[in-house]
Image 1 (spheres, rainbow over the protein chains, first blue to last red):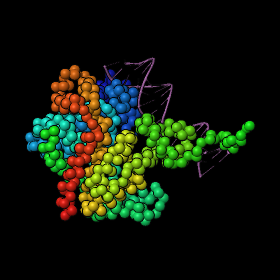
Image 2: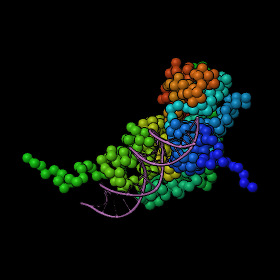
Image 3: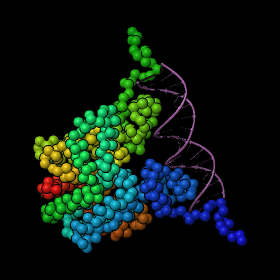
Image 4: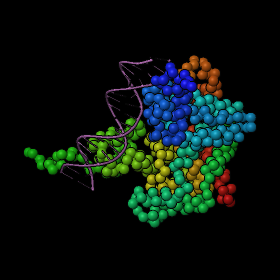
Length: 232
Length: 232
DNA sequence: ACCTGAACACCGTTCAAGT
DNA sequence: ACCTGAACACCGTTCAAGT
C-alpha cells in the first residue's frame, strides 16, 4: 500500500531543520576528519544536505563558524573541581584540555585567531580562577598559574605534531633533502639531536607520559612559589 | 646625452633576479603586515613585481612557502650558550624564541602544519640538546626540558592573542552579545573571571613580566628535578 | 523565517609557450 | 633557466528571488 509520506515537503528533502548547533557540530566533525583546509563552506553545506548559502542563516561567515567550533571544543573540557585539592583539580583539568585539543587537532592553531573568547571559554576560565581564588591564591598568582598551565597545554599539543620523534630517520632524510646533502652530512650537522632522537627511538617515547611529567614539574613549581605569591 | 641603459632587458623590468630566499623574506614581511589570510600567492607575486606563476620556480607550492617562512623565523632565534650555565642559557633562548614568535605572530599557529621540521628548526634543537647534554642532563631529561620550555613559549605566545586582559569590558560585552543577554547577566555568570580581570585592569598587566615569572617557575622546577632525572 | 540559484571577485595551480 | 599568459577548478560571499 502506498503511504502518504512526505507529500507536502517534496521539493525540500526530509531532513531536520538546520540550527546553529548542528552546523557547528558538523563543522567540528569534518575538521576532525579532513583537517581545517578540507573544511569549506561548500563541503560543510553538502555534508548537511543543503545549499552553501543556507549556512549563512546560522553563522555570519566562516570566521564566526570557526570561532563557534573552537568554543564547542572548550565545552568538552571539564571544569576544575577544588574538592580534591587545587593541585589535583588543576591536573585533571589540564589533562582534560589536552585530551580535547588532541581529539580536535585543528583547534589549537585557531585559538589565537579571534580576539573575543566564546562563552564556553569564559565559563572554563571562570571556573579555573574560582578554583584558585578559593584555594587561597592571590589575584596575580591566579593569573600566573592559569597562564602557565594553559600555555603548557597549548604548546604541548602543538608539539605533538611538530616534533616527530617517532620517525627520526624521516626527519633526518627530510633535512638532508632540503639542503640536498647526503644523510651523512646531516648526521654531522645535528649530532646532539640525532643522538637524543636515536636513544629515544630505542627507549620509546610516550606523549602521555611526557605530558604528565612536565605537568608535575609545573605544579610542583607552582606549589613552591605559592607562599611567595600570597604575600605580594 | 642618452645613456644606453637597460636596453637588452626592456621587456622585463630592471629588477633583481628572484631567488628562493627573497620570496620567503617577502612572504614573512607580508604575513607580518597583512596576517596569514592576507598572504596569497598573487599578492606575494605582486609585491615582488612578478607574475604569480614566477613564484613556482622557487617554491613548490603555498604549503612549502609557509614551511620555508616558518624556518626563516627559527633562524632569528639565538642558540643557547652554555657558557653562563644551563639555566641562563635556556632563559635567554626562551626569551629569544618568544621575541621571534611575537614579531611574527602568524608563525606559532603554523608550527604544527608540517610534519618535517626545517633545517633552522633542527639546528636550534640540536643546540638546545647539546646545551643540556653537556650540562649533565640525561637523554630523557633533555627531551623533557626541551619539550617543557618549547611548549611554554608556544602556548604563551598563543595566549597573548587569545586572552585580552587589556580590554575586560570588551570580553564581557562580547560574551553578552553571543548569548544575547544583558551585561549584568554576564557578570553573574563569570564572577571569578570578572573579579580577577577587574583587579588586573587596575594593577596593570605586563606580558613580558608574566612570561618571565612563568619561565622562572619552570626553570626552578627543572633544577629541582634534575637530580632525580640523572639517576633514571 | 528559512532556503535556493545565479553570479562576482578571488584563490592555488596546470599547461604550453615564450625568451 | 627563468618568466609569462591564458585557463581550470575551486573558494567565500552578495543579491534577488522563491516558499
